[in-house]
Length: 340
Ligand code: NAD
Ligand code: WQD
Image (tube, rainbow, N blue to C red; front, side, top):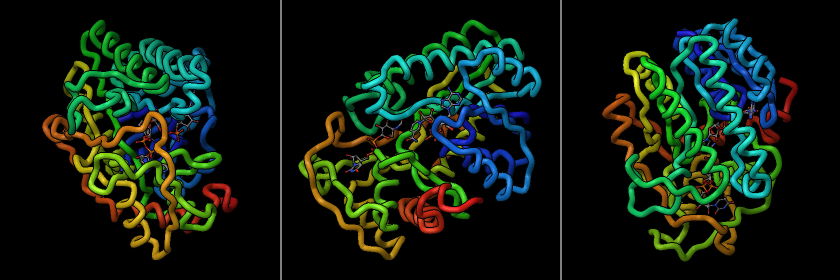
């Protein structure tokens, strides 16, 4: 299959590439490197020993995008490109709507021009908002509580309408829970710019000595140990859900939203302990106030992914922490650690 990957240089995109290339697919990456480095793509080339095309471009450069799609003639698009920082989305909502929503419309237009009607989209469990019940299934009402989450909800609806208007078109909207971990080689991984906003990269940077301690945001939640509980999904398992979604799209028109999670939660303290075991390092932490906007618990019901895609997560929290440590210990400063 020929697959056009927007945002392919990013954290999840780079892991996706290793899966696609490993399965023999032809790939073209379209990325503006606003939150990534071309070096990640060089690492993917060395890891897989497979060539692929790249275009440096922004989704909102409509003509460039349309030309790239027309030249590559993909069978399907995987759409990762987008801004993802929850806090920044509240401070700069218009940037988020322009980049994510306008960018996605430009992508669908360019796909029409290139006669490509299949898309797998990176949505997020954040579209559900505060849980009315747990685990979240796909029928749970959507009520995101920040502009980032609303961009995901709006893009889902836009894709749904686009599919409904085109006979034969198909889309899978994958609602990721908490993607974490790294490729087992330790060559690619998550490399946030500045202090990490998310737990796993923060814990990794404490383990490697870049930061002194983890701030645990609250220990008075109604969970096993009082700290927040999340459904952490290994990024390689997540990538495999996309290849399953591509196969599904190829044979079934229509639009489906599908959760991608393990179906089991881990608390902040459980994550810290698992990371200590994986790294052999002590991870100092301090309990601090709750982070505004956080929920006590978020866990997926992943049964639709199994029923429709035949996919289920195969890696556990230990695998997540070992792979994240392999990446962080070999690349203490991320991709900026070495020249290659
Ligand atoms: P990332 O920032 O590492 O990757 C996104 C990539 O898109 C980057 O390489 C960035 O340079 C590129 N990009 C952004 N805007 C662009 C534009 N206008 N034109 C071209 N390229 C652009 O993020 P990630 O963690 O790999 O996430 C990938 C997708 O998955 C995003 O859409 C994100 O919202 C979604 N998602 C991520 C998480 C998570 O926790 N990582 C959870 C749920 C959903
Ligand atoms: C996990 C748990 C924190 C950092 C976010 C986005 C969501 C999605 C994934 C894209 C929570 C606690 C965290 C720290 C801590 N992204 N924590 N100390 O908030 O579930 O989801 O990323 O779609 O939209 O909101 O993930 O990793 O930030 O937090 O105690 O330094 O760790 O309170 O309980 P979250 P997270």
